Length: 409
Image (cartoon, rainbow, N blue to C red; front, side):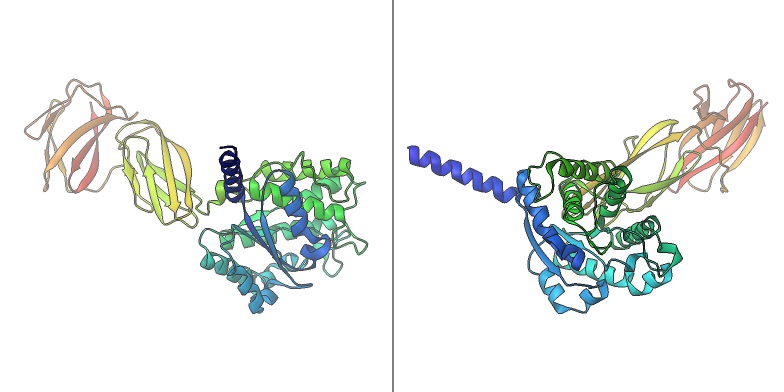
């Protein structure tokens, strides 16, 4: 019996280990190779109770175009159904002039991202936002200081992210935070470009926070970094990543679907604009009991109030939810061209004529409040019991809705 119990426990432990395994491929160049960043990340994650599987395809000086032209890069992408594939550009190219990035870098970033999705729809490309050189790059005024170059690199990697429906690990932002707040920590090697061990450890902490959406603080793996310095770097990564998950498009459980939308409101009608990423189906809830599965539906509210409009975007990997409060303060204030004719019979009584069958007639005041002191009989409305003012008559039929404005004297 004791043997069976031990076997069960071992089996459970193995199941937990397999469930926690995250598969990460690093594609880059010497910034990835120096100090063996993938191993630093892996050991850091192990010290936090994670069990990543990590592999690397890094060639010194490689640009995205070099990787696209190297068949070995695509062989590596196809080896596994990676959870994350890290993409690091050559250290300068994202900071080059906008037009140059547009033609010489962005297209190849997209090719790599598309190949990652083609291999496994649920994989997430994760761009490795690198840092400005210690004293910038003197070849252009626009990047000749650390801050100028760092800002340009940030802009470049954010472009890659948006164009590729990907995410970003903001190492360069953490780099700036440490430089500004802990200048005694040297993040650079002697060339002022490549990372020191401290710089690579900071990058590993940023990747931990980005991939697991958890703080690296209290990790017990330091490599050869002083424990006090490692604690500072862990905290810097947590601050930069975890306070801005939506900025870097880092989603829970690596869900590649991202729900987002905007609306335009006219009176009590909204038109939605679906801006979701990598989604195959949609579920809308307008907060008034009405739903839709259209991509970008329109909707008319029948009453005033605040409505929570919610969109669930889904794909085979999971789902994401976005919501927005819509305040409807008036109903039917926009006159619509219609074939309905309204005849004033006197004494605030109105007869209407329509070429289609009218299923419902409602009357609202200028505040959008429905008027109950109205009688309807034989296509005739009696408004003699309402106060004087402007009113809107809403007609509903199988063909849609229309509103007419009248003034009760």
